[in-house]
Amino acid sequence: MPRLRSSPLFPDKVLTLDVDGLPLQAHGEQPGVAYNGHVKAPIHYPLIASCGETGDMLAARLREGNASPAAEAPEWIPQVVAEAERHLCDKARVRVDAGFTDGRTLDALDEQGIAFMGRLRENPRLQRMAQPYLQPGPGRPPKGPREHVIEATY
Image (cartoon, rainbow, N blue to C red; front, side):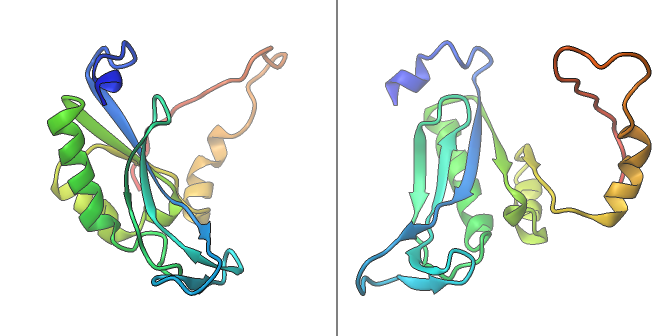
């Protein structure tokens, strides 16, 4: 990973680890292959950690095909963060999809002081809280996309 260590993409020496499950279709009877109802195929379902800034794959953990999205993540993600901080950056933060925003995974990241961002599944209470902010502002629509940020406690 010398290319990543010397990259000008990390001026603050902060790296974003993008963690996802990657369904890999299997053909045959390899150990760990299982039918996954979501994918509707026999698969392996490894966890993958890639560099959010470059897309480089940094780590993987093979799991059985019928594993839940966050299976093994609470134990594995802190290990990957520790290795990234040991070899690639001063500080690593984590980005996860909605399948990883279960209590165990987020608690594990919190306990280790790991900064994270995760997409939440649709939530009626959060939708009600956001409703006042979803209306477009007065005047003509902008030529480019708008981004509004609010802070709320849930």
